[in-house]
Length: 335
Image (cartoon, rainbow, N blue to C red; front, side):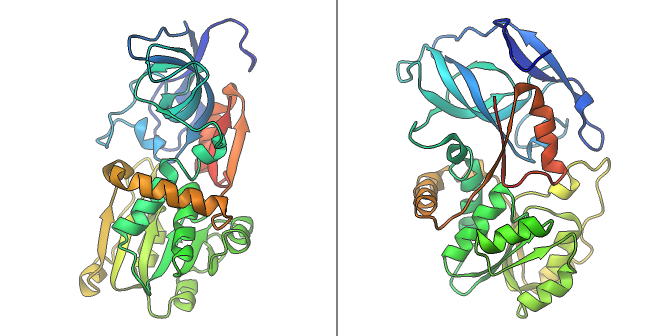
């Protein structure tokens, strides 16, 4: 089957089986169905962009989470941007673009999606102005309780969320260091994101680097990685440090859960606060976050980059890039 669809059907990637360990191509199945008909109050839209995040790995696993697991045989759920073809919603017109939680499909029908500003690029809509930027803002400002004089460390700092979080900290006048994998990503953090320092976890001794950059300890740690990185960072947290647990990508494809940090006693000794969070719990911050981030991006104070792949047939491969360290910034796919 070619990437071009001339059959007037709706191609979809379905969840064929749940992954055990690393997610692979055989977890998904390509299928065709009729183009859906929108019900009353719904719209029919043609997908133009899909967005990918590491958290989606948890959505295809049958385990307790903040949203029900995707059912076997169902299209894979994903954030996206789509052009409205037909509308039964008086507030949405054909030709409008909508964003929200959609699926790995060419056409989607539904309701509750947000009409987006056509003057803002899809890359920005699905990048820093999406849940990515909102997560960075809420995690740093509310969960990390960022205050004057704090030092800040961000893991996964070259990724979509981490890069925005690190730059917000830098813009607010804090010494900010990012952890990323590989020289190219670290160079981007220094030259484009303008962080104070970058640590290459693939080649640097993280513990040694943290002693050098944070002689008095890390006050706020924005955590995207988990695993050995979290264990190491705990050893270098300052008294009263706050840890915002955003993600733990290092363990998402583990076949069995890895042992947790064995140095949690330091949380008592140093009175450290560690708190997990979901962006959906902080809708009240979204207007403020979107306004601030949009202004920072437009003024050139926040750099962002998107890794845009193309082609419906490349959807699963694009998802895998997140776990292979291939993506540079926000992972998107243009249909």
